[in-house]
Length: 274
Image (cartoon, rainbow, N blue to C red; front, side):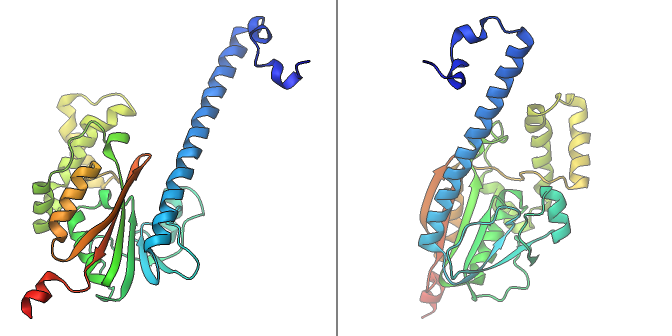
């Protein structure tokens, strides 16, 4: 005999129901399916991050931009959290009180952190927001001891709202490294207006797009300034860290990829000076 709970899984149960009830039920089922998929994806991502942490993270270090979802670390690891926003601003930005408490750390410059004292730096879903991402990596590496690691987690543009943009080029990043990135910021806002905004609202007329991009730049709306695929990011990082550090691990899961960079105990420059 079929239980009452399972009866709703049969066709006859729904045949005489009102259309409005069917519409509401289908919408709710799709909502629950989406929530379940998101939870499964988040579980997979957190599991991958935990494995990376267990293998590579130890000692004392910093995480920039941990927000309300800090990178997992095992017992005995000491993490100093930092952001360009204060704790009040972080709570408003993430709309909850679960943000990690920390101090001010500029993820681009790591100003105020003594070179050579950290065992690790963690940056998860931060570097794409920076005007000078390669500069961030080089400055972070300076703060590491020899053998220390810089863990970078980056959105895979193919699976985010950046999917219609062109991947950031190395030439663009090299120019940002020379200038600090300010002169090229407008390009990100032009991309946002033309290629990202239409995913969430009505397209902005072409004749209004430049004015809107300039307005967003003036407001410094938080957006992805740069975007990458795993292959393009690996290539760009490998070129800038040559002789200083090495990529020792990389993986992709869901909508992000993770790269672990290990600082050499003796840089190429140091060996050439011997």
